[in-house]
Length: 421
Image (tube, rainbow, N blue to C red; front, side, top):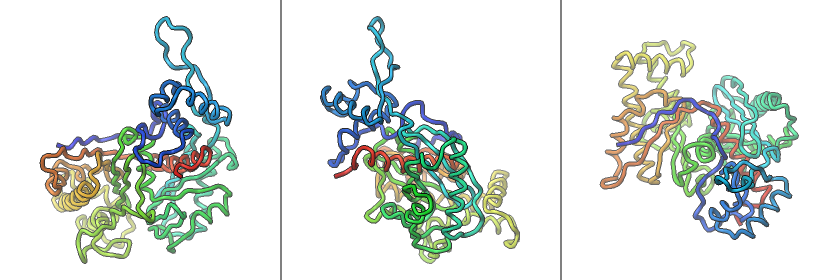
């Protein structure tokens, strides 16, 4: 059966290192200098002898490459690795110089924006949250909110904006990572916004933008369960339904950088209206606004009453837990659509792990044994080990931390050479 692990809202840092722990099998591997640096950062601390085995280089190459990185101010020697009993002084280890670079990661959402400021080793220095203004907003209004949010994080860290090498932003919608263009987002008033250029013009800091589920997938790859898994999928259920996919330790974005919009795959022709304007999307049966839409009927609420979707869902969940059959039916129906969506993910990509994440994962009806059994029934997996499923009900800050990984990737590439030829 499926191994379902319910996680607490725990966003504490890993005890050592950040970034993927497994090497990639792709032929366009990163330069050796960068591989050495990233091995040290992933391990937290590493001896030169360790990297010769892990990367497959000679002791002489390890000495030359690490000397270069030390000279550049990116690595430093420290004592701290355990020594064998009776064998002289402890061996010298290497670690990332944390103050060499700083980045900010931002998660934008309908209700609350979150920011995390980290050093070059990926350790959290400061964090901040800011309520999002209700309704759709202009680009200028969004930049103003980002300005206030970053200022809060910078003040907590005691740093000026000039210390920040890059900013990563994750937001819902269709985002072209390569160009920094937001083709569509549920809380922007107009489509096709060049967020990268507008951000750089206002703040003078490079920004790297991606879909919020992609940055959550990076959070798992850099700081979470995905560090030791080469291939996994992340499916999120919140204000929308999103999906991120990691293949061979790399985030998959599609040919135009806008793939894997699981929430906008069609599960019912001419079905329920989705906020994207089309009908029958998976999101139209699972997302907050979709469940709240049905909750209004089940709870006999006047649709003109000013009640947020989250408040409506809390009331619906309480009713379902207390035995209200109409409320239970809504969750059961949503669970069946989720089963269909997850089975499609397994059928198409055969991931080693699916991580279900987002605020809606507090509603156990969506990951009950029945939902997972239905997923298995819809998947052609006879004779194979079922895909493992874990539940990570993270809060907003882990999404922002994933956005720091987006920025750290870019800053590392700039500091150590391009990741690919």
